[in-house]
Length: 177
Image (cartoon, rainbow, N blue to C red; front, top):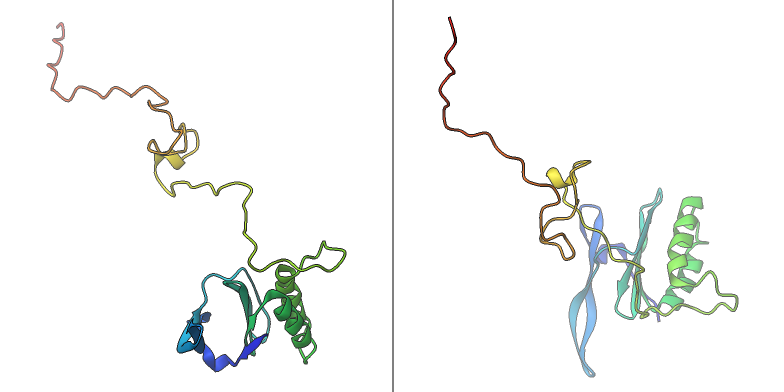
């Protein structure tokens, strides 16, 4: 079942939606309370002339924020609701936003139309690479760009230390007259 929420139920920080407010939340099989659905970073977002379109994960369900409010429900059902929204007087940019979000809700490579599971575990092919934003290790030609405390970093310095000049004053050599 897809639940439609009007735009007034969206709490925003600047232009970004942060939560759907005044939502009936189950706390036990037979008890409920009024709460909210927090919205973090969107999986996909697009902007049209009418406003923001964005997809958010919500447990086994998904949330799609669109200029007319928000849709919450299972991915397959939300995809169907998006199809119906795309025909209601929206322009090409709105239909493009619907297509972009819909790609995350359905498997475009499936020949039999099977849907992706919204609860499917996400896997990554390689971890993200971190780096220092400033400092000598981020300058071209200065050895290993990884900090010394990273796993796998060399235990010794890659270059021998540069000797510093002796700070004690030296007597000036005598000149022959």
